[in-house]
Image: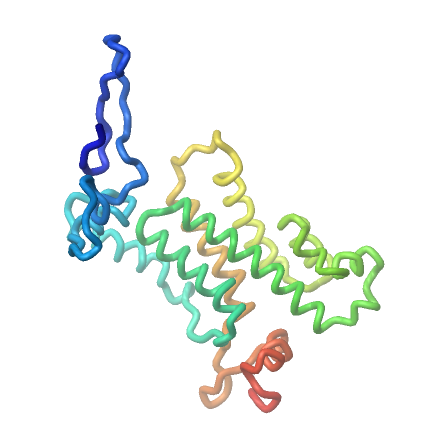
Length: 254
């Protein structure tokens, strides 16, 4: 019979009558602050302290300390060199690149370091494909080598692996060595944690931090709108035609 309880690791007696004991984690996917047994009514108020315990992977017992830890991790990812002031209010850029990077930051703050790494991987894959999209509209594809033409035919670059996408863009001179290195850093970290069961978690927080920094360095030069003369926003050349086609800027924009 199931019973209500908080997340806990307990020793359970087997039903076979044997004397052997097994340790188990009861209801590992539940959030006791919202759902306990017997079931709570949706009208019932949620205890914010219990909700904090559910959301933060640190499983804090002292809420003030938990909030302090969240703030500390937030500030770690909010330094001057990890900040973007303005990005275009364009649907694809926001939904596929900017908001997922923000979600990665939120995951890091809540000590969900695997979630942070996974989201950084997604952000970089979307960013690299976006660079191909921009190139397809800016470059004269007919002048490319035959093997590169094939990549742009029917958006085949979307079906390439991330390692090959980065390599092809670098060979085309479409991205710098620095951007390629940062994209590859995220790819390698993501691959280690999301593809290998044998990967240990001894450096998980550190790797999540490195993945976020590298992802940010891929994103900033791609979507940031820098300030120009007299404090006016400057639209980078690689975004100008794209944003005009989406109705986000006009040809007269800076």
